Figure 1 (cartoon, one colour):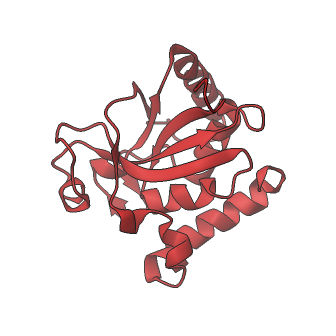
Figure 2 (tube, rainbow, N blue to C red):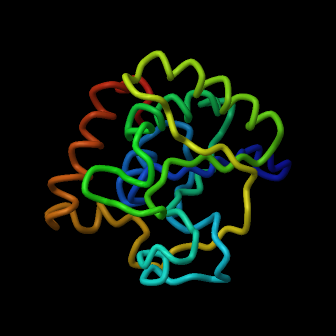
Amino acid sequence: MSEQTGSEVAILGGGCFWCTEAVYLEVRGVTRVESGYMGGHVVNPSYEQVCSATTGHAEVVRLEFDPSVISYRDILEIFFTIHDPTTQDRQGNDVGPQYRSVIFTTSPEQDATARKVMAEMAAVWDAPIVTQILPQETWYKAEDYHQNYFAQHPLQGYCAFVVAPKVAKFRKTFANRMK
């Protein structure tokens, strides 16, 4: 937890970061959302490099949240609902290691919570959960044009047919957690 702001950080990869970012921007208690890359071996990768599936990075979102408003556990329950954690290196038509399901934890407490929530969510899914739980690594913020992408391009094809349904699912399932 940041002593200056009282906020915590969660780093999540659930497929394309445009989808994940769009949902968490609507979550009450989430104060900042940035799209970026983590988990690879290339320093300061570009989107094109990450999309080549050769950097080892995942597309992730870095959330800052107020734990007095929303818990890390609640953040993870949303995460396991808005994407399919049972598909290896894939979300829908997005295929490659950059789209893997991954939680990068910032503390031993987050690691323990993530493992507990994932074990509980295993009962919800028909296939085994393949989400990786790893300690945080170096964060690389994605290019500016990726930030707040869905809000800026709601009619773009991918946004209309992939992002919008995920946001709608969040709104229906977690109406009590919306801003």
